[in-house]
Image: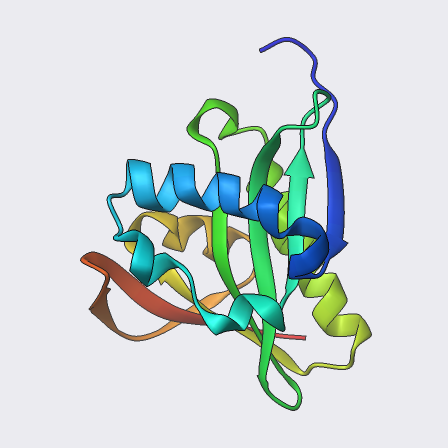
Length: 147
Protein backbone atom coordinates (compact mmCIF):
# COMPACT_ATOMS: atom_id res chain seq x y z
CA UNK A 1 0.00 0.00 0.00
CA UNK A 2 1.40 3.43 -0.84
CA UNK A 3 2.19 5.64 2.09
CA UNK A 4 -1.11 7.18 3.07
CA UNK A 5 -1.57 9.62 5.85
CA UNK A 6 -4.42 8.95 8.23
CA UNK A 7 -6.09 11.42 10.56
CA UNK A 8 -8.09 10.44 13.65
CA UNK A 9 -10.91 12.68 14.84
CA UNK A 10 -13.07 12.47 17.95
CA UNK A 11 -16.46 14.14 18.11
CA UNK A 12 -20.21 13.88 18.35
CA UNK A 13 -22.64 12.38 15.83
CA UNK A 14 -23.55 15.79 14.43
CA UNK A 15 -19.89 16.32 13.51
CA UNK A 16 -18.73 12.82 12.54
CA UNK A 17 -21.92 10.85 11.93
CA UNK A 18 -21.87 11.02 8.15
CA UNK A 19 -18.27 9.74 8.06
CA UNK A 20 -18.88 7.01 10.65
CA UNK A 21 -22.02 5.92 8.80
CA UNK A 22 -20.04 5.41 5.57
CA UNK A 23 -17.68 2.94 7.26
CA UNK A 24 -20.38 1.16 9.24
CA UNK A 25 -22.57 0.77 6.15
CA UNK A 26 -19.73 -0.77 4.16
CA UNK A 27 -18.52 -3.10 6.92
CA UNK A 28 -21.65 -4.08 8.81
CA UNK A 29 -24.51 -3.71 6.31
CA UNK A 30 -22.76 -4.61 3.04
CA UNK A 31 -19.86 -6.88 4.04
CA UNK A 32 -21.41 -8.63 7.06
CA UNK A 33 -25.04 -8.47 5.83
CA UNK A 34 -26.41 -6.99 9.05
CA UNK A 35 -29.86 -5.50 8.33
CA UNK A 36 -29.57 -1.71 8.16
CA UNK A 37 -32.39 -1.22 10.65
CA UNK A 38 -30.38 -3.21 13.21
CA UNK A 39 -27.21 -1.14 12.72
CA UNK A 40 -28.59 2.26 13.71
CA UNK A 41 -29.81 3.17 17.18
CA UNK A 42 -30.45 6.19 19.38
CA UNK A 43 -27.13 5.68 21.20
CA UNK A 44 -25.27 7.34 18.31
CA UNK A 45 -26.66 10.72 19.38
CA UNK A 46 -25.05 10.56 22.84
CA UNK A 47 -21.86 8.67 21.96
CA UNK A 48 -18.37 10.00 21.44
CA UNK A 49 -17.33 8.87 17.95
CA UNK A 50 -13.86 8.22 16.59
CA UNK A 51 -13.28 8.32 12.84
CA UNK A 52 -10.08 7.89 10.88
CA UNK A 53 -9.92 9.44 7.41
CA UNK A 54 -7.30 8.90 4.74
CA UNK A 55 -5.40 11.70 2.99
CA UNK A 56 -8.31 12.19 0.57
CA UNK A 57 -10.76 12.72 3.44
CA UNK A 58 -12.45 9.33 3.02
CA UNK A 59 -13.50 7.64 6.25
CA UNK A 60 -11.76 4.27 6.68
CA UNK A 61 -12.28 3.34 10.36
CA UNK A 62 -14.67 4.15 13.18
CA UNK A 63 -15.85 3.27 16.67
CA UNK A 64 -18.00 4.80 19.39
CA UNK A 65 -17.85 5.27 23.15
CA UNK A 66 -20.89 5.21 25.42
CA UNK A 67 -21.32 5.44 29.18
CA UNK A 68 -24.13 3.02 30.15
CA UNK A 69 -23.56 3.82 33.84
CA UNK A 70 -21.18 6.10 35.78
CA UNK A 71 -17.61 4.78 35.70
CA UNK A 72 -18.29 2.25 32.94
CA UNK A 73 -17.34 2.90 29.33
CA UNK A 74 -18.77 0.84 26.49
CA UNK A 75 -17.02 0.70 23.14
CA UNK A 76 -18.93 -0.46 20.10
CA UNK A 77 -19.44 -0.23 16.36
CA UNK A 78 -15.73 -0.74 15.75
CA UNK A 79 -15.20 -1.06 12.00
CA UNK A 80 -12.29 -0.78 9.56
CA UNK A 81 -12.67 -0.94 5.79
CA UNK A 82 -11.32 -4.18 4.34
CA UNK A 83 -8.88 -2.30 2.07
CA UNK A 84 -6.96 -0.85 5.05
CA UNK A 85 -7.14 -3.66 7.59
CA UNK A 86 -3.84 -4.80 9.09
CA UNK A 87 -2.54 -1.20 9.14
CA UNK A 88 -3.21 -0.60 12.83
CA UNK A 89 -6.23 1.65 12.35
CA UNK A 90 -8.56 -0.39 14.55
CA UNK A 91 -5.91 -0.23 17.27
CA UNK A 92 -5.73 3.58 16.90
CA UNK A 93 -9.50 3.95 17.18
CA UNK A 94 -9.66 1.62 20.20
CA UNK A 95 -6.78 3.32 22.04
CA UNK A 96 -8.28 6.78 21.41
CA UNK A 97 -11.63 5.68 22.83
CA UNK A 98 -9.97 4.01 25.85
CA UNK A 99 -8.03 7.21 26.52
CA UNK A 100 -11.24 9.28 26.30
CA UNK A 101 -12.86 6.91 28.82
CA UNK A 102 -9.83 7.21 31.11
CA UNK A 103 -9.90 11.03 30.88
CA UNK A 104 -13.55 11.22 31.89
CA UNK A 105 -12.78 9.02 34.91
CA UNK A 106 -14.24 5.68 33.88
CA UNK A 107 -12.97 2.66 35.86
CA UNK A 108 -13.49 0.01 33.21
CA UNK A 109 -14.28 -0.50 29.53
CA UNK A 110 -16.66 -3.17 28.26
CA UNK A 111 -17.45 -4.31 24.75
CA UNK A 112 -19.13 -7.05 22.79
CA UNK A 113 -16.54 -8.58 20.46
CA UNK A 114 -17.29 -10.49 17.31
CA UNK A 115 -15.67 -13.92 17.61
CA UNK A 116 -13.20 -13.08 14.82
CA UNK A 117 -11.98 -10.01 16.77
CA UNK A 118 -11.43 -11.59 20.20
CA UNK A 119 -7.68 -12.00 19.57
CA UNK A 120 -7.39 -8.33 18.56
CA UNK A 121 -8.98 -7.15 21.81
CA UNK A 122 -7.04 -9.68 23.92
CA UNK A 123 -3.74 -8.35 22.54
CA UNK A 124 -4.78 -4.88 23.72
CA UNK A 125 -5.48 -6.04 27.28
CA UNK A 126 -9.16 -7.04 27.24
CA UNK A 127 -10.35 -10.21 28.97
CA UNK A 128 -13.22 -12.33 27.63
CA UNK A 129 -16.09 -13.21 30.00
CA UNK A 130 -18.97 -15.63 29.80
CA UNK A 131 -20.17 -17.80 26.97
CA UNK A 132 -20.29 -16.94 23.31
CA UNK A 133 -23.70 -15.67 22.12
CA UNK A 134 -25.39 -14.70 18.89
CA UNK A 135 -25.91 -11.02 18.07
CA UNK A 136 -27.37 -10.13 14.65
CA UNK A 137 -26.42 -13.59 13.39
CA UNK A 138 -22.74 -13.26 14.38
CA UNK A 139 -21.00 -14.99 17.31
CA UNK A 140 -19.93 -12.50 20.01
CA UNK A 141 -18.35 -12.59 23.45
CA UNK A 142 -18.34 -9.96 26.20
CA UNK A 143 -14.93 -8.51 27.07
CA UNK A 144 -13.64 -5.97 29.60
CA UNK A 145 -10.59 -3.90 30.49
CA UNK A 146 -9.89 -2.35 33.89
CA UNK A 147 -8.49 1.17 33.68
